[in-house]
Length: 161
Image (cartoon, rainbow, N blue to C red; front, side, top):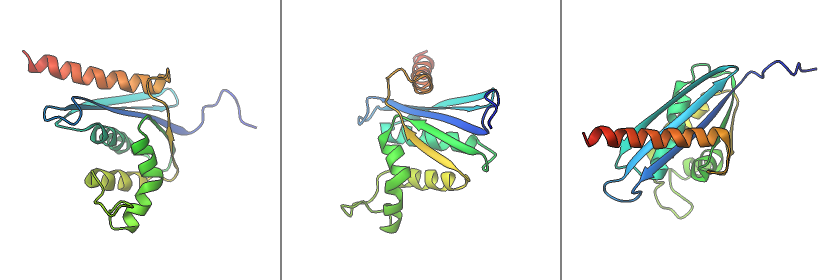
């Protein structure tokens, strides 16, 4: 029987990315992730100039995975990007089989980031990717979204001084 006071031996990761002016020349991306393990929490965030939303989301997931040293612990990852969650859970296997081409025989966009995310995720013994609806009062997702906004606003403040 599991003691209800005992926390499971699992790391919970939330990640998010966002962009101001997505798809435009002056796009400013940000990424953020949070890690929770027992009572310990760690978070980080950053900026990517001339990024797309998808690049920001992929970067957030990669940065979070890179921070985890113990690859043998169970890992549950939450993100609001269906692009990332579906891509790493399902699509990537077909892309690899098809030499990094989509089902339409087009080159996979952001291949370098997909390769990096795939390689990082394969290091973990047990990893679970779960999609959550963004901006829907999910505390973990709301927090990393706030970190993304903070990163962009802080960057813009320092650039205008």
